[in-house]
Length: 166
Image (tube, rainbow, N blue to C red):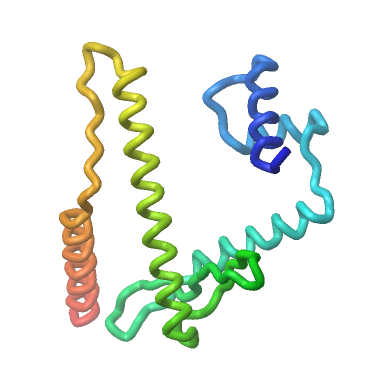
């Protein structure tokens, strides 16, 4: 049984035991640890440490020469001897190839998330949406959203500059 399957079983056990729902993941974790359904063995400890380090790398931002807040560290998948490894590098020192692979990988993750969101919305609308409610619409063209965010960032940048000059 995979780690995901083990954790899903814990969640099912939590629900089956009559605990409150909806719930936070922290509440389920407290219950699972208290019930001795989850512990941290050596391999889980390394995985948890790696996950936390990866999260920290995802959260490291720098300001580029144009004043944009950008992520410093980027992960890219590498296939070495038939095994997939995710390697991190800093955009300020990474090879162009690493950055191409990283950006393509992130784009594919976004596409995958959008596809799953569409499937979830379609399923909800077809199976669970109350008949007297409008179906939820999914819009997957982000052009206007990106333009709006860029305009907002420029306006904030101009506001910051004009505030400094006063």
